[in-house]
Amino acid sequence: MKILVCVKQVPDTSGVVAVNPDGTLDRASMETIINPDDLNAVEAALQIKDETGCKVVVVTMGPPPAEGMLRELEAMGADEAYLISDRVFGGSDTYATSQIIAAALHKIGIEDDDVVMCGRQAIDGDTAQVGPQIAEKLNLPQITYVGDIHKEGNKITCKRMLEDGYMTIEVQTPCLLTCIKELNEPRYMSVGRIMDAYSMPLTVLDNEALKDEPLIDPTTIGLKGSPTNILTSFTPPQKGAGTMLEGNGAETCQKLAGIMADKHII
Image (cartoon, rainbow, N blue to C red; front, top):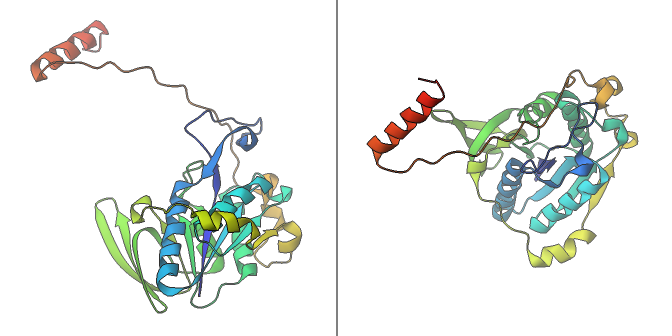
């Protein structure tokens, strides 16, 4: 059994977000981090590995520097890593991205007792579309917004979080799960594995390696082939500093009413 975890290197959106003229993110000029929800998916896979001894494989699509992120995940406990990287794939929207990743997972191989895990969504797009689209393209049953996982044999029971509660769903492997931050607390890299990470398996899959995969359609990958396009993208202006009102309830209400009256709001 193996668990294939899809991860993404994303811009650190706590800083300035730079945008290229074509509307895509200027990732080269920004600091990057591992997408937070993806770390929860990695931790979930590693916890199952701790219990069962299964193999954990991490997969990402991105530029060559994303290798550093994969090495960090191997230092956390992943056994193998795959980097999907080619200029042809650049600028892909969610449909094209899921198509490319699904082809890579198909090439790696998904057996009857395997599980594919993804984070709920990436902080740079917030679409939550890629994971479910991968499941559809691979014809896998899927459970999204997973807040708890219990695996027994080829059966997985998950608690799927809803806005006002949760639902319990049982699914057979192979399947795909998307994980939320409430699922767990990601572990740190271990010192010993940091030393070993750069000698662990890492395979680069480019367009040449994937072009013969049946799931790849060369007309719908990359920026020009993506079915959706960004018309404009920009960094929103920063909000002004807030005003703190001190005093008891009656005093602060009086002060607030005075401020609103001065601004002709009331």
